Length: 400
Image (cartoon, rainbow, N blue to C red):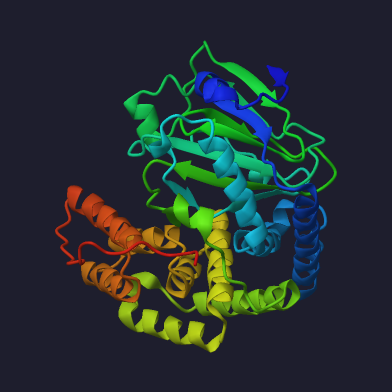
Protein backbone atom coordinates (compact mmCIF):
# COMPACT_ATOMS: atom_id res chain seq x y z
CA UNK A 1 0.00 0.00 0.00
CA UNK A 2 1.34 3.43 -0.94
CA UNK A 3 0.52 7.08 -0.35
CA UNK A 4 0.01 8.96 -3.59
CA UNK A 5 0.73 12.58 -4.35
CA UNK A 6 -1.83 14.62 -6.30
CA UNK A 7 -2.00 13.86 -10.00
CA UNK A 8 -3.28 16.35 -12.54
CA UNK A 9 -6.34 15.54 -14.64
CA UNK A 10 -4.16 16.06 -17.69
CA UNK A 11 -5.94 14.77 -20.75
CA UNK A 12 -7.98 12.45 -18.48
CA UNK A 13 -5.24 9.84 -19.03
CA UNK A 14 -4.58 9.31 -15.33
CA UNK A 15 -8.30 9.13 -14.55
CA UNK A 16 -9.02 6.68 -17.35
CA UNK A 17 -5.87 4.60 -16.79
CA UNK A 18 -5.70 4.33 -13.00
CA UNK A 19 -9.34 4.99 -12.19
CA UNK A 20 -8.83 8.12 -10.08
CA UNK A 21 -7.19 11.55 -10.14
CA UNK A 22 -6.73 14.64 -7.96
CA UNK A 23 -6.85 18.24 -9.15
CA UNK A 24 -7.62 21.78 -7.96
CA UNK A 25 -11.30 22.72 -8.15
CA UNK A 26 -10.42 26.34 -8.83
CA UNK A 27 -12.94 27.99 -6.49
CA UNK A 28 -11.57 31.43 -5.43
CA UNK A 29 -9.80 31.11 -2.08
CA UNK A 30 -11.94 33.73 -0.34
CA UNK A 31 -15.17 32.05 -1.48
CA UNK A 32 -13.98 28.64 -0.36
CA UNK A 33 -12.84 30.03 3.00
CA UNK A 34 -16.30 31.54 3.52
CA UNK A 35 -17.91 28.15 2.80
CA UNK A 36 -15.61 26.43 5.29
CA UNK A 37 -16.45 29.05 7.93
CA UNK A 38 -20.17 28.51 7.33
CA UNK A 39 -19.71 24.75 7.59
CA UNK A 40 -17.88 25.13 10.89
CA UNK A 41 -20.64 27.36 12.27
CA UNK A 42 -23.45 25.02 11.14
CA UNK A 43 -21.68 22.02 12.66
CA UNK A 44 -20.97 23.79 15.95
CA UNK A 45 -24.51 25.13 16.38
CA UNK A 46 -26.31 21.94 15.33
CA UNK A 47 -24.14 19.90 17.70
CA UNK A 48 -24.76 22.29 20.61
CA UNK A 49 -28.53 22.39 20.06
CA UNK A 50 -28.84 18.60 19.76
CA UNK A 51 -26.78 18.20 22.95
CA UNK A 52 -29.15 20.56 24.77
CA UNK A 53 -32.33 19.04 23.33
CA UNK A 54 -31.39 15.45 24.20
CA UNK A 55 -29.19 16.12 27.24
CA UNK A 56 -26.18 14.29 25.80
CA UNK A 57 -22.52 15.03 25.13
CA UNK A 58 -21.65 14.26 21.51
CA UNK A 59 -18.38 16.16 21.26
CA UNK A 60 -16.64 12.78 21.04
CA UNK A 61 -17.88 9.75 19.12
CA UNK A 62 -19.69 7.21 21.27
CA UNK A 63 -21.65 4.34 19.73
CA UNK A 64 -24.32 4.68 22.43
CA UNK A 65 -25.02 8.26 21.29
CA UNK A 66 -25.15 7.46 17.59
CA UNK A 67 -28.79 8.60 17.21
CA UNK A 68 -28.19 12.24 18.31
CA UNK A 69 -24.83 12.31 16.50
CA UNK A 70 -26.60 11.35 13.28
CA UNK A 71 -29.16 14.10 13.83
CA UNK A 72 -26.41 16.70 14.21
CA UNK A 73 -24.64 15.35 11.13
CA UNK A 74 -27.90 15.35 9.17
CA UNK A 75 -28.65 18.99 10.00
CA UNK A 76 -25.20 20.13 8.84
CA UNK A 77 -25.54 17.96 5.73
CA UNK A 78 -28.92 19.55 4.96
CA UNK A 79 -27.51 23.08 5.12
CA UNK A 80 -24.60 22.11 2.87
CA UNK A 81 -26.93 20.28 0.47
CA UNK A 82 -29.09 23.36 -0.16
CA UNK A 83 -26.40 26.04 -0.35
CA UNK A 84 -25.41 28.01 -3.43
CA UNK A 85 -21.73 28.18 -2.37
CA UNK A 86 -21.68 24.38 -2.48
CA UNK A 87 -23.43 24.43 -5.85
CA UNK A 88 -20.66 26.75 -7.08
CA UNK A 89 -18.07 24.15 -6.03
CA UNK A 90 -19.94 21.51 -8.02
CA UNK A 91 -20.14 23.84 -11.01
CA UNK A 92 -16.36 24.33 -10.97
CA UNK A 93 -15.72 20.59 -10.63
CA UNK A 94 -18.04 19.84 -13.56
CA UNK A 95 -16.23 22.41 -15.71
CA UNK A 96 -12.88 20.89 -14.76
CA UNK A 97 -13.95 17.33 -15.50
CA UNK A 98 -15.65 18.21 -18.79
CA UNK A 99 -12.53 19.92 -20.06
CA UNK A 100 -10.65 16.64 -19.65
CA UNK A 101 -13.18 14.14 -21.03
CA UNK A 102 -13.50 13.69 -24.78
CA UNK A 103 -17.05 12.28 -24.79
CA UNK A 104 -19.29 15.04 -23.43
CA UNK A 105 -22.18 12.57 -23.20
CA UNK A 106 -20.41 10.99 -20.22
CA UNK A 107 -21.52 13.86 -17.96
CA UNK A 108 -25.14 14.70 -18.64
CA UNK A 109 -26.59 14.39 -15.13
CA UNK A 110 -25.56 15.24 -11.58
CA UNK A 111 -26.80 14.51 -8.08
CA UNK A 112 -27.57 16.86 -5.24
CA UNK A 113 -24.43 17.40 -3.16
CA UNK A 114 -23.95 15.07 -0.22
CA UNK A 115 -21.67 15.84 2.72
CA UNK A 116 -19.66 13.06 4.34
CA UNK A 117 -19.08 13.93 8.01
CA UNK A 118 -16.69 11.91 10.18
CA UNK A 119 -16.39 12.42 13.93
CA UNK A 120 -12.87 11.47 15.18
CA UNK A 121 -12.82 7.70 15.64
CA UNK A 122 -16.31 7.43 14.10
CA UNK A 123 -16.52 3.70 13.35
CA UNK A 124 -20.03 4.11 11.90
CA UNK A 125 -18.52 5.89 8.90
CA UNK A 126 -15.88 3.29 8.08
CA UNK A 127 -17.31 1.27 5.22
CA UNK A 128 -16.09 -1.71 3.20
CA UNK A 129 -14.36 -1.57 -0.17
CA UNK A 130 -17.08 -0.96 -2.77
CA UNK A 131 -18.04 0.54 -6.14
CA UNK A 132 -20.36 3.54 -6.59
CA UNK A 133 -21.59 2.85 -10.12
CA UNK A 134 -24.77 1.17 -11.28
CA UNK A 135 -24.78 -1.46 -14.02
CA UNK A 136 -27.37 0.49 -16.04
CA UNK A 137 -25.21 3.65 -16.18
CA UNK A 138 -22.42 3.65 -18.76
CA UNK A 139 -20.32 6.56 -17.46
CA UNK A 140 -20.19 7.37 -13.76
CA UNK A 141 -17.82 9.71 -11.89
CA UNK A 142 -17.75 10.42 -8.16
CA UNK A 143 -16.01 13.56 -6.92
CA UNK A 144 -14.98 14.16 -3.31
CA UNK A 145 -13.94 17.60 -2.02
CA UNK A 146 -12.57 18.10 1.53
CA UNK A 147 -13.72 21.11 3.55
CA UNK A 148 -10.80 20.89 5.99
CA UNK A 149 -7.12 20.01 5.92
CA UNK A 150 -6.72 16.24 5.93
CA UNK A 151 -4.17 15.45 8.64
CA UNK A 152 -4.89 11.78 7.92
CA UNK A 153 -5.45 9.88 4.68
CA UNK A 154 -9.23 9.50 4.37
CA UNK A 155 -9.54 7.22 1.33
CA UNK A 156 -8.17 3.93 0.08
CA UNK A 157 -8.28 3.49 -3.71
CA UNK A 158 -7.76 0.25 -5.62
CA UNK A 159 -6.05 1.44 -8.80
CA UNK A 160 -7.00 -0.19 -12.12
CA UNK A 161 -10.01 -1.90 -10.51
CA UNK A 162 -12.38 0.04 -12.80
CA UNK A 163 -11.00 -1.91 -15.78
CA UNK A 164 -12.04 -5.31 -14.39
CA UNK A 165 -15.78 -4.75 -14.53
CA UNK A 166 -17.60 -8.04 -14.89
CA UNK A 167 -21.40 -7.88 -15.09
CA UNK A 168 -21.98 -9.57 -11.73
CA UNK A 169 -19.62 -7.31 -9.79
CA UNK A 170 -21.14 -4.24 -11.47
CA UNK A 171 -24.71 -5.36 -10.75
CA UNK A 172 -23.94 -6.08 -7.11
CA UNK A 173 -21.51 -3.12 -6.86
CA UNK A 174 -18.92 -5.50 -5.40
CA UNK A 175 -15.15 -4.90 -5.24
CA UNK A 176 -12.95 -6.65 -7.76
CA UNK A 177 -10.19 -8.06 -5.51
CA UNK A 178 -7.98 -8.75 -8.51
CA UNK A 179 -4.26 -9.18 -7.75
CA UNK A 180 -3.17 -6.62 -10.34
CA UNK A 181 -4.75 -3.75 -8.36
CA UNK A 182 -2.57 -1.29 -6.44
CA UNK A 183 -3.88 0.06 -3.13
CA UNK A 184 -3.13 3.77 -2.65
CA UNK A 185 -4.07 6.48 -0.17
CA UNK A 186 -4.26 9.69 -2.23
CA UNK A 187 -3.24 13.00 -0.69
CA UNK A 188 -6.11 15.46 -1.19
CA UNK A 189 -5.23 18.98 -0.12
CA UNK A 190 -7.58 21.81 0.79
CA UNK A 191 -8.64 23.34 -2.54
CA UNK A 192 -8.38 19.99 -4.34
CA UNK A 193 -10.92 17.36 -5.27
CA UNK A 194 -10.52 13.70 -6.13
CA UNK A 195 -12.48 12.04 -8.92
CA UNK A 196 -12.87 8.33 -9.55
CA UNK A 197 -14.75 6.08 -11.94
CA UNK A 198 -17.95 4.46 -10.77
CA UNK A 199 -16.29 1.06 -11.15
CA UNK A 200 -13.21 1.98 -9.12
CA UNK A 201 -13.04 0.10 -5.83
CA UNK A 202 -12.56 2.43 -2.89
CA UNK A 203 -13.02 2.57 0.87
CA UNK A 204 -13.60 5.37 3.36
CA UNK A 205 -11.10 5.12 6.21
CA UNK A 206 -11.43 5.85 9.91
CA UNK A 207 -10.94 9.49 10.90
CA UNK A 208 -7.77 9.30 12.98
CA UNK A 209 -7.44 13.07 13.34
CA UNK A 210 -8.67 15.07 16.32
CA UNK A 211 -11.28 17.10 14.44
CA UNK A 212 -14.56 16.45 12.67
CA UNK A 213 -13.86 16.09 8.95
CA UNK A 214 -16.32 17.10 6.23
CA UNK A 215 -16.21 16.51 2.49
CA UNK A 216 -18.60 17.17 -0.39
CA UNK A 217 -19.63 14.46 -2.84
CA UNK A 218 -21.02 15.17 -6.32
CA UNK A 219 -21.74 12.43 -8.84
CA UNK A 220 -21.75 13.01 -12.59
CA UNK A 221 -23.26 10.41 -14.91
CA UNK A 222 -24.22 9.72 -18.53
CA UNK A 223 -27.77 8.75 -17.49
CA UNK A 224 -29.78 9.46 -14.33
CA UNK A 225 -29.30 7.70 -10.99
CA UNK A 226 -32.90 6.79 -10.35
CA UNK A 227 -32.62 6.36 -6.57
CA UNK A 228 -31.10 9.80 -6.00
CA UNK A 229 -32.19 13.37 -6.72
CA UNK A 230 -30.67 13.74 -10.17
CA UNK A 231 -30.83 16.68 -12.57
CA UNK A 232 -29.36 17.56 -15.97
CA UNK A 233 -25.93 19.12 -15.59
CA UNK A 234 -27.27 22.19 -17.40
CA UNK A 235 -29.26 22.95 -14.23
CA UNK A 236 -26.08 22.83 -12.16
CA UNK A 237 -24.32 25.11 -14.64
CA UNK A 238 -27.04 27.76 -14.83
CA UNK A 239 -29.39 27.30 -11.88
CA UNK A 240 -29.44 28.15 -8.21
CA UNK A 241 -30.93 26.75 -5.03
CA UNK A 242 -33.55 28.72 -3.14
CA UNK A 243 -32.77 29.58 0.47
CA UNK A 244 -34.57 28.37 3.55
CA UNK A 245 -35.99 30.81 6.10
CA UNK A 246 -34.80 29.17 9.34
CA UNK A 247 -31.30 29.70 10.70
CA UNK A 248 -29.41 26.61 11.84
CA UNK A 249 -30.32 27.01 15.53
CA UNK A 250 -34.08 27.28 14.93
CA UNK A 251 -33.90 24.53 12.33
CA UNK A 252 -32.07 22.25 14.78
CA UNK A 253 -34.63 22.86 17.52
CA UNK A 254 -37.51 22.20 15.13
CA UNK A 255 -35.81 19.02 13.90
CA UNK A 256 -35.49 17.77 17.48
CA UNK A 257 -39.16 18.55 18.14
CA UNK A 258 -40.35 16.74 15.00
CA UNK A 259 -38.04 13.82 15.73
CA UNK A 260 -39.53 13.36 19.20
CA UNK A 261 -43.08 13.57 17.81
CA UNK A 262 -42.41 10.88 15.24
CA UNK A 263 -40.63 8.71 17.79
CA UNK A 264 -43.66 8.90 20.10
CA UNK A 265 -46.10 8.26 17.26
CA UNK A 266 -44.00 5.31 16.12
CA UNK A 267 -44.80 3.48 19.37
CA UNK A 268 -48.45 3.19 18.39
CA UNK A 269 -48.32 2.73 14.61
CA UNK A 270 -47.71 -0.42 12.59
CA UNK A 271 -47.47 0.15 8.85
CA UNK A 272 -48.35 -3.48 8.21
CA UNK A 273 -51.77 -3.23 9.85
CA UNK A 274 -52.71 0.43 9.32
CA UNK A 275 -54.85 1.93 6.57
CA UNK A 276 -51.95 3.43 4.64
CA UNK A 277 -54.07 6.00 2.81
CA UNK A 278 -55.45 7.38 6.07
CA UNK A 279 -51.97 7.39 7.60
CA UNK A 280 -50.46 9.23 4.62
CA UNK A 281 -53.23 11.84 4.80
CA UNK A 282 -52.65 12.27 8.53
CA UNK A 283 -48.89 12.69 8.04
CA UNK A 284 -49.51 15.17 5.22
CA UNK A 285 -51.57 17.25 7.66
CA UNK A 286 -48.76 17.06 10.22
CA UNK A 287 -46.21 18.20 7.64
CA UNK A 288 -48.43 21.14 6.67
CA UNK A 289 -48.65 22.09 10.35
CA UNK A 290 -44.89 22.66 10.39
CA UNK A 291 -45.57 25.75 8.23
CA UNK A 292 -42.17 25.61 6.56
CA UNK A 293 -41.12 27.10 3.28
CA UNK A 294 -40.33 24.61 0.53
CA UNK A 295 -36.55 24.45 1.06
CA UNK A 296 -36.74 24.06 4.83
CA UNK A 297 -39.25 21.25 4.32
CA UNK A 298 -36.85 19.54 1.90
CA UNK A 299 -34.12 19.89 4.52
CA UNK A 300 -36.23 18.35 7.30
CA UNK A 301 -37.20 15.47 5.03
CA UNK A 302 -33.56 14.89 4.12
CA UNK A 303 -32.53 14.80 7.81
CA UNK A 304 -35.31 12.31 8.65
CA UNK A 305 -34.55 10.12 5.63
CA UNK A 306 -30.82 10.02 6.26
CA UNK A 307 -31.23 9.42 10.00
CA UNK A 308 -33.57 6.49 9.25
CA UNK A 309 -31.20 5.02 6.67
CA UNK A 310 -28.24 5.16 9.04
CA UNK A 311 -30.19 3.80 12.01
CA UNK A 312 -32.35 1.18 10.29
CA UNK A 313 -30.33 -1.73 11.69
CA UNK A 314 -30.63 -0.33 15.23
CA UNK A 315 -34.15 1.16 15.45
CA UNK A 316 -37.64 0.78 14.02
CA UNK A 317 -37.45 3.61 11.47
CA UNK A 318 -40.35 2.83 9.14
CA UNK A 319 -42.43 5.83 10.21
CA UNK A 320 -39.43 8.15 9.78
CA UNK A 321 -39.14 6.93 6.20
CA UNK A 322 -42.83 7.56 5.61
CA UNK A 323 -42.67 11.11 6.99
CA UNK A 324 -39.61 11.83 4.83
CA UNK A 325 -41.10 10.66 1.54
CA UNK A 326 -44.35 12.55 2.18
CA UNK A 327 -42.55 15.76 3.15
CA UNK A 328 -40.33 15.98 0.06
CA UNK A 329 -39.99 14.72 -3.49
CA UNK A 330 -36.20 14.97 -3.17
CA UNK A 331 -35.77 11.74 -1.17
CA UNK A 332 -36.24 8.50 -3.11
CA UNK A 333 -34.72 5.85 -0.86
CA UNK A 334 -37.54 6.21 1.73
CA UNK A 335 -40.13 5.60 -1.01
CA UNK A 336 -38.36 2.36 -1.86
CA UNK A 337 -38.12 1.28 1.77
CA UNK A 338 -41.78 2.01 2.61
CA UNK A 339 -43.01 0.26 -0.53
CA UNK A 340 -40.78 -2.75 0.10
CA UNK A 341 -41.95 -3.02 3.71
CA UNK A 342 -45.60 -2.88 2.70
CA UNK A 343 -45.14 -5.45 -0.06
CA UNK A 344 -43.46 -7.86 2.34
CA UNK A 345 -45.46 -7.32 5.51
CA UNK A 346 -48.95 -6.00 4.79
CA UNK A 347 -51.96 -6.81 2.59
CA UNK A 348 -51.29 -6.23 -1.09
CA UNK A 349 -54.02 -3.60 -1.16
CA UNK A 350 -52.07 -1.47 1.32
CA UNK A 351 -49.00 -1.46 -0.93
CA UNK A 352 -51.18 -0.65 -3.95
CA UNK A 353 -52.78 2.27 -2.11
CA UNK A 354 -49.38 3.63 -1.06
CA UNK A 355 -48.18 3.51 -4.68
CA UNK A 356 -51.32 5.35 -5.85
CA UNK A 357 -51.09 7.94 -3.08
CA UNK A 358 -47.41 8.58 -3.78
CA UNK A 359 -47.75 9.03 -7.51
CA UNK A 360 -50.70 11.40 -7.01
CA UNK A 361 -48.63 13.45 -4.58
CA UNK A 362 -45.40 13.27 -6.57
CA UNK A 363 -46.03 12.43 -10.25
CA UNK A 364 -42.35 12.22 -11.19
CA UNK A 365 -40.22 9.86 -13.25
CA UNK A 366 -38.01 8.84 -10.31
CA UNK A 367 -41.01 7.88 -8.17
CA UNK A 368 -42.45 5.89 -11.05
CA UNK A 369 -39.16 4.00 -11.38
CA UNK A 370 -38.85 3.20 -7.66
CA UNK A 371 -42.44 1.97 -7.34
CA UNK A 372 -42.29 -0.09 -10.53
CA UNK A 373 -39.00 -1.70 -9.52
CA UNK A 374 -40.42 -2.84 -6.17
CA UNK A 375 -43.63 -4.12 -7.78
CA UNK A 376 -41.64 -5.93 -10.48
CA UNK A 377 -39.46 -7.62 -7.84
CA UNK A 378 -42.53 -8.68 -5.88
CA UNK A 379 -44.25 -10.10 -8.99
CA UNK A 380 -41.10 -11.94 -9.99
CA UNK A 381 -41.24 -13.64 -6.60
CA UNK A 382 -44.85 -14.74 -6.98
CA UNK A 383 -46.87 -11.55 -6.58
CA UNK A 384 -49.57 -10.34 -8.94
CA UNK A 385 -49.68 -6.57 -8.53
CA UNK A 386 -50.56 -4.05 -11.21
CA UNK A 387 -50.63 -0.31 -10.57
CA UNK A 388 -51.32 2.14 -13.38
CA UNK A 389 -48.77 4.94 -13.37
CA UNK A 390 -48.86 7.64 -16.07
CA UNK A 391 -46.06 7.62 -18.62
CA UNK A 392 -43.77 10.48 -19.67
CA UNK A 393 -43.66 12.00 -16.21
CA UNK A 394 -41.30 14.96 -15.55
CA UNK A 395 -38.14 14.84 -13.44
CA UNK A 396 -38.07 16.10 -9.88
CA UNK A 397 -36.69 19.65 -9.97
CA UNK A 398 -34.30 20.72 -7.23
CA UNK A 399 -32.90 23.87 -8.82
CA UNK A 400 -34.43 26.99 -10.31
